[in-house]
Image (tube, rainbow, N blue to C red; front, side, top):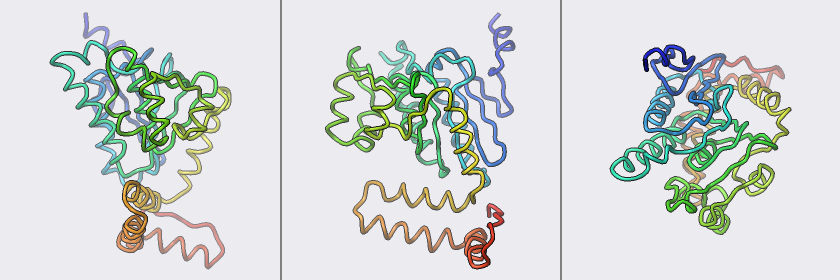
Length: 273
């Protein structure tokens, strides 16, 4: 019976063998889809597959953007953890899986964008916020951090929130079990942009096109420099960025093409190498 249900599930099989997520790479964009609607609960299985999907992108040199989204028909971007898996002997497995998935987002060496077209609760909200860019629907893209109200707390939120919104706002959000409206989430830096729901798809498409028009190694080098400097003193961060620029970016063909195009007053012809 279970096998029959899986065969009817359009997300039960993908070309890379995942059952709870899907990964499709086309025209420089890797679309990673949470494929367990309606709630996209972050089970141990889904988190493991999400981490493996993100880790596999590391070797896709042509990828210019990783887009994290929910499957069509989802009522939530993600409703967070499967609560039954967060207690007792299963707690370590789900926390380890969540840490691995968020680490994979940070370490994938490609720009990342989450699209939150429906509510994101708890670990789902932190998964979206862990991306470099986060676009949310201004009407439905509610973010909520309710764990403390249910006798727990989110481990990734404890580490990530102060880096995103500052110490005092992080305490308010996490200790208060806060519900954050999209406009407020944008104001405090929890998300990049709140977009009216009826324009969200078009704005995301326009952003994707801007990334597709750029050079993969240039984008990757710039992102690498940003990430290396996030939590170190300014002088050290500048030296780290210089190292990326001189020893990585300038070794790419596209760096030379970009300069040549400027001098010749023409659009660059990127080779993504």
